[in-house]
Length: 246
Ligand code: 13P
Image 1 (tube, helix red, strand yellow):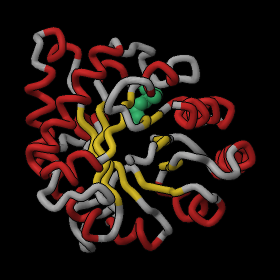
Image 2 (image 1 turned 30 degrees about the vertical axis):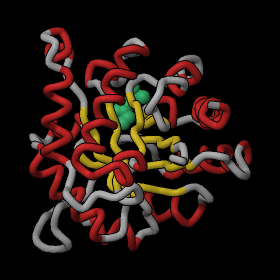
Image 3 (image 1 turned 30 degrees about the horizontal axis):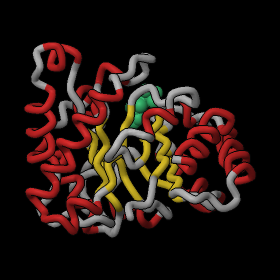
Image 4 (image 1 turned 60 degrees about the vertical axis):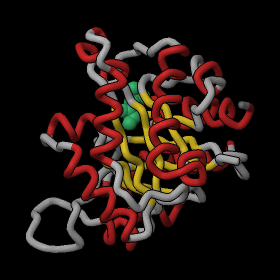
């Protein structure tokens, strides 16, 4: 009932030439059985949306519609450029830009108001995991970062343990399953079964062609938010295929 989603986050990578990877990906997946979303840097957003058959999203937005916020882009601008979604609350933004959950929630609300799907990220640090605080941290980020008007269409949750991002380290399948089940239960409790069971929950953090299949078999994992392995069609394509087969 939940359509699977393979999402790629290019982060601060990619000049114009990088768009060729979208063509290669489209050639390999002319009619994918899962949703495919690519989030290039803002400079490539409009060109990617024109060129690609896949959905295109952004990596961040401002909480306001417009105004004196040099360097920021609004959710409406992303929509205007052809975007369908925006990542908010990525740990790199929470850390680099000191973004707390109240800002993330305001950004998610702005995204939803503009007609975009907000992909709200959350995850614990290694210290927090080692102190066995993971579920407390996730519970707090969930409660704080997700707006009240969430629906199965305008919200995707991404669980990305900070220590697994770009490190090659991946939680055990049991650890992934525990956090995803916890997020699912919290969503159901807050929004009811309709929305709670409909929202997709992605896993992110060192997803690669060789571990995707196992991760996608974990209950409540509805897809992945992929960083490094989304940059090359040769790496992202087998991840899409693994999700189709799951
Ligand atoms: P990696 O797949 O490179 O670990 O990055 C994950 C991520 O942060 C996606 O948003």
